[in-house]
Amino acid sequence: MIMGIEKQAREKRSLIDIAKQVMIEKKQAMSFSQLYSEVTQIKGLNEMEKRSRMSQFYTDLNADGVFVFNDNNQWILKRWRRNV
Image (cartoon, rainbow, N blue to C red; front, side):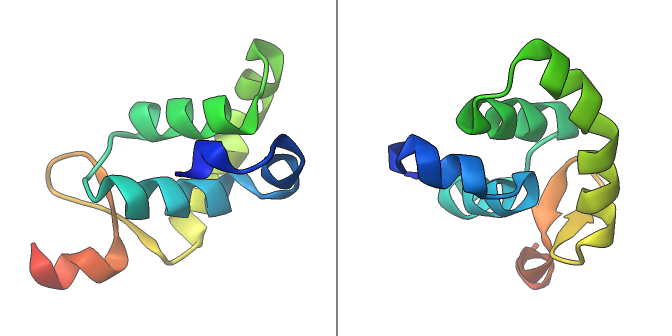
């Protein structure tokens, strides 16, 4: 699991890369708040960092092309759309 990655390696990974890994490992749709909470926990961000990065994470999530907002108000990986 991604939490098993050494701290130094996690610090170098982007929030979006971590989000992709979380979704792949969990194999389930997630709300934005669920996904962001898990990603920031893995990344080890403090409350101030979480607040300051939230808007950019949301923008990146929309722009990345790997994630899709589904009909259940949750995010999924685009490749899952064929299977839903």
